[in-house]
Image (tube, rainbow, N blue to C red; front, side):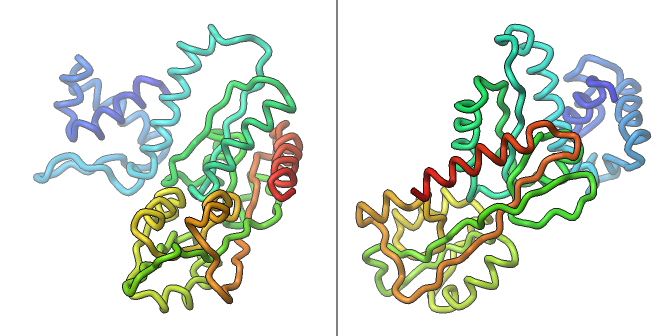
Length: 278
């Protein structure tokens, strides 16, 4: 698939029309149509619908867009920046399904570099992206996810689950808020009783750091990873909810079957978790 075709697809999606994209790219509308048709023929799916209401992405087009953006970003780096990088550096692209592991992903990259030297590193925080699919299609080399992968194109290793504690601010007041991070079925089954006790819920759709900041500023309660809130517990900004059961959120490391980095990533992550728990 041509890079210009991807560039054109993203331009049409951004400008909302084939005419506008043609003007921005300084090409004919016929050229724009041909480039879009090239992608549609290779994928077997329509990218846009065109009607009285304008040009809109199809459902597949919306799903394809983050992959196109990722491919364009990687191409830009590979063609412009990579030639000037230090030679003999390992390339590694890491991703996480949920923002509950964003800090862990950064720490994992640092630990991997400590073990294996400086990296050509990409960290993906796009939580609309299906991380298992991204690994299977070579967008990422490895990813962390809470859902057990079933895709035969990938390998996975179940790691020690992430421990989440139910905590609250010292003064929750008479109008307690429960921050619901929407972290999948295991999480939802566990939090139902805690959520029912709160007068209201605020949903952050998996964004752990936003939810934590909200609780600290607004007051309230929620489940958060122990390693994320440890400093706040020690400072008295948060306290465990008396009698609450800890939640063990599943954690899987996913790589492709042809990946050479699998065992190295597992070892680095194991080192990191052991250090944190110690």
